[in-house]
Length: 118
Length: 110
Image 1: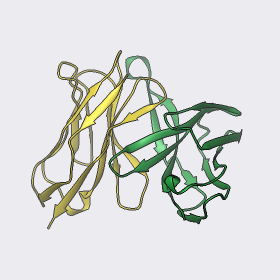
Image 2: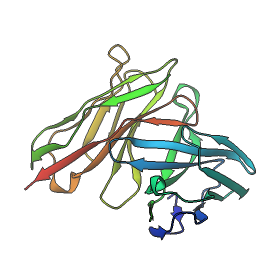
Image 3: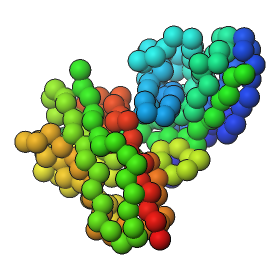
Image 4: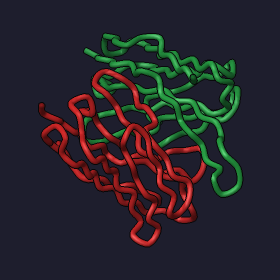
């Protein structure tokens, strides 16, 4: 089974702190993603990475940065945490499955980190 | 751009009732369609998928059929259980990115 792990389930930080959220996957997937999940808004993509040291902005990258130095690890960084970044953060990894018209990408999610910024 | 719309919740049912959660999409090309489930305190799990028109995805008694003519991918289950209480997300993919609906919470009462 694919396993995606996140460094913390719950995290409490103060406004202005630098925050690191770590994600590790064990299936040699090329693609990794960071989402935030808020009530009524569903999941919104913050950043994704399609290879080591490669990254691309998602829909809401402001206030965040990422790092991918190794294929299995993808870090989300909040340079200066603010209260509006209180949220559930979900990491995912994906690879292609199937062939021809059945070819698609499946994403596998970690358990999430609930971050509270006070 | 591509988007997914699903019915607002919560949906509250009694055990053994029939479930339908509606999902419609807007997309160019030929996306793959997915249903994910999120149990309380956990991340998302892939429930089922369909990669082309008329495909039916199924898993754990849940089913959904990819209907290109109505751009829909409704989730159904014939007899729900208390353990099915969760949030269900419809999603589409036309590349390596997923676009999610806002989620529908299902509450099943004994």
